[in-house]
Length: 394
Image 1 (tube, rainbow, N blue to C red):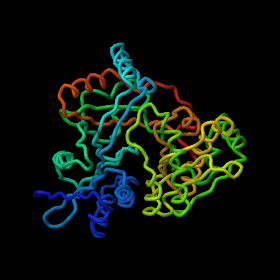
Image 2 (image 1 turned 45 degrees about the vertical axis):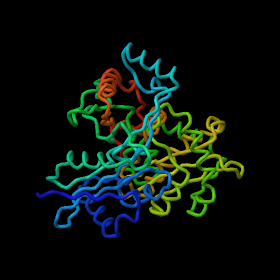
Image 3 (image 1 turned 90 degrees about the horizontal axis):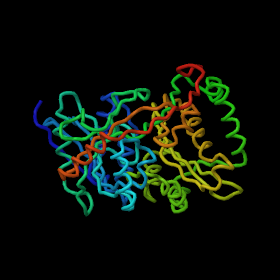
Image 4 (image 1 turned 135 degrees about the vertical axis):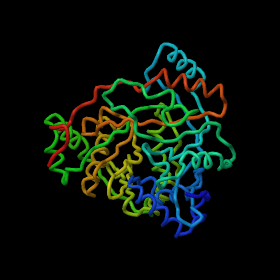
C-alpha cells in the first residue's frame, strides 16, 4: 500500500484543524469507539503542562491518514503488589523484597494513556503494518528529560473470560519479545437496555436495590454540583488535594492526574466532561469526573475525604452518579475502572479482563519480568450478581 510517513507532536498546535478532523475520521471508520482516543481528549492531554505526551499520525503519500496513536512518558510504582496479585512462593519472596526496598519505581513509556484502562492507544486502517508503526513511535526521542527503559502497550481484551481460572501473564500472544501482564479487570455496567433510572432499579435483584436505597439514605445530606470551567480552574488545588487522598492509598500506580488536567479536559470536551463537586454542610468534601461520547461514559477519577466515606457512603454514591449520568446520556455502557471490584459488582458492573504488553530494554530485567508475570495473576474473587437475569432488561 506504499510507505507511510509518521508525524508527531507534543503540543496541540503541532497538528492543524484538518489533521485533527482526519484523526477523528479514522477513529470513526475503525468502528472501535474510544473517548480517550478522540482528538478532544488527546488535545487535553497535550495541553497539560506536566504531562509528557505525544500524538502521532501516519500518512500515505496521497495525504490520507492511515494511523493514529497517543503515547506518554510517565512513571510506575508499586507499594503493595500483594494487594492485587496472587502467585507462587517464589513470587511471594520477590514481593517481600520489593516492599523492604520501599516499593518498585521505574520510568515507563506508555502507548496509550496511563490514566485509563482499555484499548485507547491506537487505531490503524486495514492493511497497515501496525507493529512497524508502533515500533517507529516507541523509538522516538524522550518527551521529557528521561528516555524510559520500560515500554508498555495498554490494554487489549484478554482471551480468557473472568470465570476462567487461567493465567494470561507471561509469554506474549501479541508479539514475540514482549511480556503479557494482567492486573485486575475493568468493571463495566451494561446499560444498553436501560433507558431510565427506574428501569435500572427494576432490573436489579432485591439485595442490590436494598443496598442502593441504603447508599442514597446515608448520602442524603450531601450536595452535588456540576462545575463550570471557571469553577474547576478556581478550585484546581482543592480538587487535586482530594484526588491525592485516594491516589496516595493505591498499591500500584501508573501515572498521576495533574493539577491542570481537569480544566484542560473541560476546555476541550465541554459538557461531555463533567466534574461533579460534592459538598457537606457547604464545604467541598469530594468530587467525581467523567467523560462521555454517544457509546460510553468513562468514570475518570474521584477524590474525597476518607473520614466521610463510611458514614456517608461517599464513594458508593459517586459510583451511582456515574451510572445515573450514563443512563441520562443514553450511553450503552458505563466503565467504572479497575478498583473496588466487589462494590462495583454489587451495583451491576461486570469484569472484563485486560492484558498489557511490556518490554524492558535491559534483557536481564526483561527476563525477570517475564518470570514474575508468569508466576502471578489477579487474585480470584467471587463477585456479586446484581442483575435479576444474565443481562439487564427494561
